[in-house]
Length: 390
Image (cartoon, rainbow, N blue to C red; front, side, top):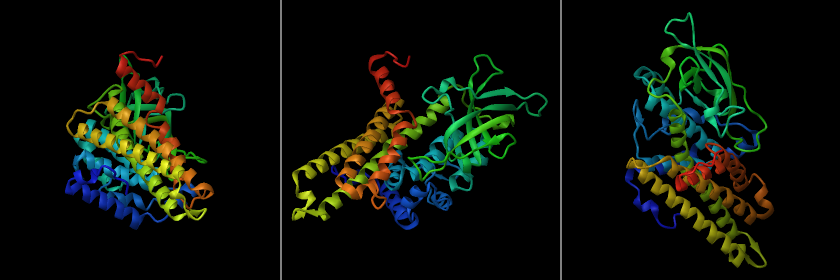
């Protein structure tokens, strides 16, 4: 595996064990992710197995969660995405976007009810923020929460719709962000919405051309009553959903390295095996230049991810750090997957090789959890002090 600066030698025993466990899991349990990608399905049997392995929010503590290092968590995301972005997305959404807000902002009762079940994969969660008319500007969300009259506990009634929601068609609970229209300033609140409640529908989005080995859908909320005890009590405002996205983007910055590395390894093997004009194509200068540049860019992304983990572990990571890493590493994976496909020639467009599958997946990863352009503007504002969103 590409590790040009020998970063593996810096890992703790726990971190090495997690890498080995993830690779063994993928080799032994993930039978044909390429066929799932072709069929547009997710291997559902893996959900509890990933829970048994401790792949959901392993960097959190308590409630049966492992509490591993931030580097170990990143390495796990790297290995899962080296297999397929859909596999990493499942673990990332479950852990960073569902379990994290419950762990960080939930009541004791919410934590005790949901974290053990989500951690083992007995329950599946999803994260409802993006709306049909509000993607890059989530603060303009239209989903409404209003106090419910006549209900015990002074609960809420939710109305609105969310879209591009990973796992929603199979989820047991959705973390839904909505504006509370019964309070001054309409603060944003988080709600734990069981998907079997009256008025909740979670239609699947079909015919995707990217991230096909992942289940994506919508959340429609029509006069959905949610009791007061389902409100996340420890957060209001956009800090709630944005802090969740920071956690998820951290995992993406690592995961993209895995996808890029897999493309490189396939291209290098192909270049040393495929013969043209009497020698392996890896013996030609043009192909060596491609491999050298791929290795350099992937190594830079790898080093950025490791430094990001150090900052996160020390409590010094800022959202802007994550924006830079997500922006750079996903772009790197997007570019290197294309180059790997190019090196494979006509064979590269078949499902027999993963670079084109990674390449199409990266179109989603490039867009979700903050588009490449939005992360550019986040960095621009941080560097100049001047917001350019309007």
